[in-house]
Image (cartoon, rainbow, N blue to C red; front, side, top):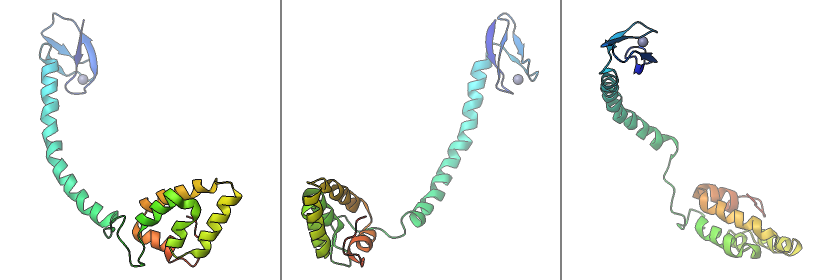
Length: 161
Ligand SMILES: [Zn+2]
């Protein structure tokens, strides 16, 4: 017995080795036994070019969608200064390195928040610096306009996240 693949319904079936033609038990399609796999692979390759030629069209249509969708306006660089005069990169680095001193709050003009930060760090025996570290990572990763909205232009004296 030999394993064959039907060209019509693409199902596997077995047929005797000595037979020149095999008949698919599922759909009744008759094909030559020896070339069945080769013919099948040729057919598979023959079907691929249409899909391949469609891919460039698909990529072209995705391009404008990405441009209009996920990136409405290009963001400024991490260390570029925004309209408020603050850079999220500097604030983020300060929060990462010496966040427990509340320096990133002072930098953002949140003097009260800076003092609260120092106080909280003293009360929590330094555990608070874990939070300011996370703040630093978030600041570096977020968009500049989001950073300014959350940390600089907010009415809150102690903006957290
Ligand atoms: Zn078949």
